[in-house]
Length: 142
Image 1 (cartoon, one colour):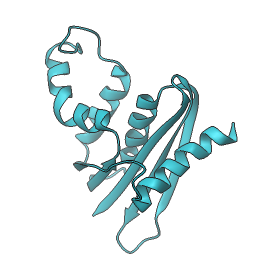
Image 2: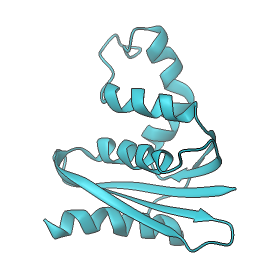
Image 3: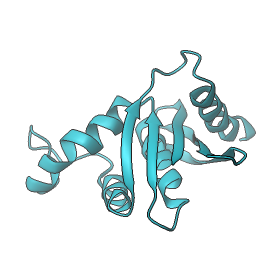
């Protein structure tokens, strides 16, 4: 069983953004990953964190993925099916924002067995806080 904590952050929205990931595998040391973009949005960084976390594993895995983003969790569990049926349009007939990232994430979840969990951000969860720190680390180095 694999557990992934993801987070995205942005300084300005749009602005400089970072993403952070903590990967926990049984009987192994945690893996910490981060990156970012000079011109992005918070939602793009949240999505990128989940994509990068799932891309890390080449073989099919059972993964519990924690995100503090309702946008990511609701989007992948609920909204995406209607978006695809409606030609990537929202319920209000507008184009889905960040479609290219949603398409990547949608493809990745077919390669793994993912259980999605929401965790409240900035509420003292050790690994969520670490993922946030990793995301902000990218922003601070610029």
